[in-house]
Amino acid sequence: MNCGLCEDEAGERYLCERDTRALAGRLADLPTLYDEVGQCLVPRGHGWGEIVATRSGAGPRSPLNEDVLDTVNWGRAAEVVHLWRVDVQRERWPHHGAPPPADLRADCRWLAMELEWVVARYPAAGDLAREVHELERQARSVVGDPAPRPQRLGTCVAVDGEGVVCGAVISRMPGQSRLQCRWCSYVYESERDWLLLLHFQPAESA
Ligand SMILES: [Zn+2]
Ligand SMILES: [Zn+2]
Image 1 (tube, protein in one colour):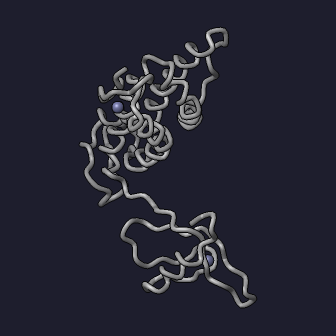
Image 2 (cartoon, protein in one colour):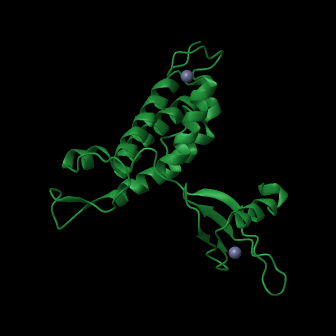
Image 3 (cartoon, protein in one colour):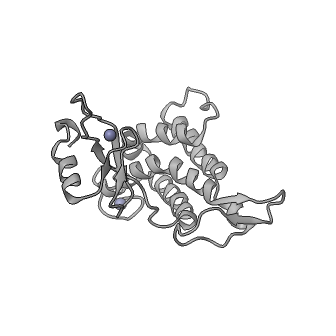
């Protein structure tokens, strides 16, 4: 079969490996992305007519108008994803009733958990992937592409007076070169600090 999205050969499946992985990633990211959309576009005053950007320097932004708010928002993304969930569930378990109303986060998680089945058995997998991709594209047109995201570096290796390692999660924005541990206030700044951080990571998180 050919991939329902990119038309590449996909073996026995409705989506190729690459698009399956991309869809899984998008389902995982979508709720966070739409959270960010909500932070970028907020109504000022009491009318939808006066939309202002709340952040500056976040990257390219769609024109701030009612069309954007009508089409790119949490509610609409939730609606689209929920309809897919309803359909997948009906195909997979025809005897079950419709799924309960859920939010975007829960529906994305549900679809992600059913992804194996979707890719193997659901002929509309390509359309699902296309609409999820479109939701992502629209959100990114508002929040910037690619949106800057914190990178998880590992856990804090600073040692306190009693010899106890801090262990708090350390993450930074791309390009950030100075960072203070939010838990113990240790500052990572020099190259040596970063090397120590990487060197002393517990094996399982390295
Ligand atoms: Zn593909
Ligand atoms: Zn720390």
